[in-house]
Length: 257
Image 1: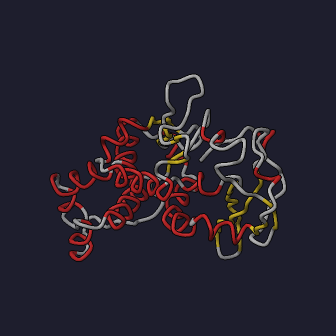
Image 2: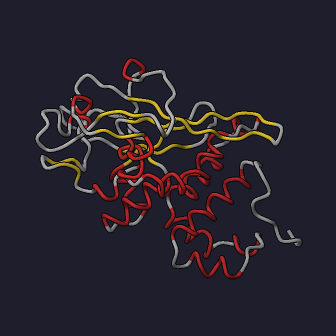
């Protein structure tokens, strides 16, 4: 997501019913300024949408438009959008008329100027994840001075984030869950997680060209589905990651192994 400095984040936790005024349009003085010198975290579904929009393989997209960092807490690989190497460090997809991949832009660009956070709470039924929202008020942004009124809920609908949240929820789940062994992930496991999460074309080849289907007992219908359905492939990748991180027995190993 675009990662604002803490001084730009209002600490109040907002609900879907919270009201605010905001509008971004081509005639506003700050138009596209929020698209420069930013740190955008990409989710697996973001990458799936963007690489399809550009007609690239996941490998080519990742090589050309992203870089990888390892999260200090979880030791898991994270992918971020690579800004242009110019004075303003612009997003590679921004143009004077706006975003060139607007209908396939990342989830956190969709949310802006709202930020989304998740709290993991313990309950009698076990830990649950609770989503909340907050305002991002950057000095250059004049959108809050506009008269169009929203609730967080209507903003989410207008920006089309429901599908993105649904697709990203499982990924966020294993980002939040902590297993003591995660901090000891070696480079080989990090590479496997990176591939299963973000490099779907490579993961698909690994699945069908290695002993993957001999080792794991996966339903035949699911195997057939992932041949043509990239969302199904992404979700299978999530199961594999949960298995690698020993979060849950998401995949079953065949008895002879």
